[in-house]
Structures are given as C-alpha cells and as structure tokens.
Length: 432
Image (cartoon, rainbow, N blue to C red):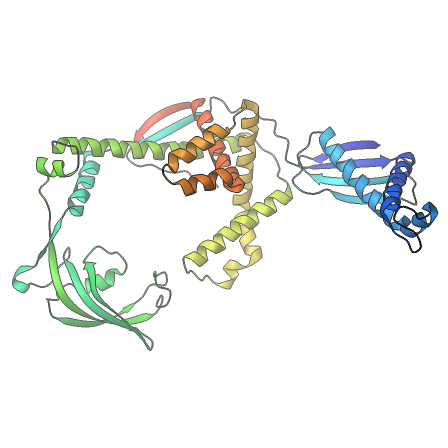
C-alpha cells in the first residue's frame, strides 16, 4: 500500500492511497472463501457450492465490501502511522477502482490542530484581592442580628411602616382569573418579589382592607401573570415588628463557640477574607486563559466548532425554558443563535486545547485514586451517590475532566509571576 500524507492546513490532513492489484486479489480470494464456506445455493449444502457459481452470484457484493474495508483499514493505518487525532470521520473522494484492479482514493480528515507552544511559565499576572473593611464586617454582623430577631406584635394599632412584617390575606385578578392566598408573611421594604405590592401595605392598620392595581413586570417569576395588570385586594390580619438582639458578648455566645463579640467579628473577617481570596483565584484563572489565548494563535476544525456551538445554543434554549422566558422568534432563529454563540464556542475550544497541550507536556493527569478521594469526600455517608459515581463512566469522565482543568490551572498559577494587589473592588475580566 502506498500512502502519502499531506497537511492541507493546521486542521486538515489528506491521505492519497494506492492499493495494489495483488493485495486486492488476495483480499478478494479471502472474502470469496468466507462466503463459500457459509452460503447455501439451491441443490448444494452450505460450503459445497461450486466456487465459480458463488463468485458469479456474489462478485459485485464481495468487491463492494472489500473496497469499503480496504478504505477503512488504510485510513486507520494512516492515522496510526502519522499519529494524528481525527475529530470527524474521513471524507473519502476520487475513488478509482475497476474489477479487482488497483484501488486508489483520497481521504480528507479533520484533525486536532498542532499546537507548538512552550511559553506558558512565568506568566506575569496581577492578583487583585478585595480588602475586607470594618464596614463589611459590621454589615455581616447586622445580617446575623436580623436573622436572630424576634417578631413582636405592633402596639397601639399603628399603621404599617417599612421594616414591619405583615401577615395578610389577599386575592388578585388578572383578566377573568382570580387567585387568593391566606396568612402570607410579607416583610415590608425587603423587595423580595414585587416591591410595589409591599409599598401598598404601608399605612394599613390591622383589620383594614385595600384594593390597588399593579403592572406586573415582564420577567416576573409567575409567567401566567407576567406583563399583565393585576388588581389586588389585601386585608391586614396581623402586624409585627422586629426586635433585634443587642450585639454584645451574650449575642456572641449564641453564635456558637465564641465568648466575646470581638471573636465573632474576627471569625467574620476571616470568612470574608477566604471568600475574597477564592474569588481572586477564580479571576486569576480567567486572566491566565486570556493570556494563553493571546500567546498561542491557531485555527480550529470546523466540525468541532459546529458541535460546540450547537451545545451552547441548546444550553441557552434550555435555560430560557427553565426560566419560563419566551423571547421573540428572531432570537431563537438557528442562524442568529449560531452567530451569537460561535465566538464563545471558539474561545472555549481554544482554551481547552491549549490546556490539554500543557497537560501532555507536563504529564498532568487525574488518577483513579484522586477521583475516588473526591467521591468519598463529597458523598461521605451517601452510599447511593458513591455507587453512582463509581459505576457511571459518563459521570466519571465529566468529573475527571473538570478536575484535570483545575489541576492544569493550578499548575499555571504556581508557575506564574504573580504580584498581589489589594483593591476596594474586584473587576472581573470575562473571557470572550
């Protein structure tokens, strides 16, 4: 077999293959004998039919099969011989063949791009860490205070005001449909779902009713009334006010293993610092990827881009459906969706290919022991989940790939030239 390999570009390889007449004849004889051994013709038992009769009847089918098999075998041999990584099946063309004579063809194969890139150590980076201020600690402390507040009945039947907790019965009508709810607890001014509803409770006393109409936002959580006008009738059943505990050493003891409020503040500060450090690390990983993309330029196989773009489009549509969002038809147009998500797909693919290249050069892998350790750490005591993740190959592949990316990024951070900068606000640089 003659096989010439030509790199058409960074993502395409072309094989030019010629298979000799002698090899065709040998394969034909082998296939014919296999058919002869199992075929039954009228008047003959299996394997006893005359060879010339079998050849005459099955000649065309045998030749079609050997051509298909020889093309497949030649492509497989070329892929192995030239150590390429296909991303799609070969596109076979220019097949030249006639009745057990020489076979020739070309095969165009999309492959993973060749990445020649070594400049990934000592990347200069600035790690921005948000400084924890005293007011941040105080804000967290006040939130704890709010969470431990007790509700007391409002005295003197005063009107409701911002900060009160109202217990109300209400009904609303949209078009011709009415719905009602009893004993609904609403913290006035918390702006949890519909701020205008809470505002209309201000001034109401226990026992009083109020009717009002609101324009429901387009993105409201209930799609049945989103974007419509709703008429509400509300009755104030109870009105309560929060009684906040004093922030002192007694409050600290209620928080757990603390003796003083200063210990609580210190624990809050350390917790916020840990969160800020984690966020800084995540932003740093994004910066590393952006830097790598700027240093390593290469083209991508069209097949991979198409597949990844389709996945991102499907995820977007799934998200919209899960949120009960119905965008205009032109937004969900296949062509416009692909135009929107293709750049993101290309960036994601390039990032993964660069990281994969670094992993191969540095021999970075995720062992079975590391995977099992992750399982038993995260699902300790949950035998069902442990079995599921031990036996499900798809889950294993997804998780080990995620762990591998994390290991590569941590390797790059460990080998980067990082300067730490304390800032008041973190500016995240999104990867395009």
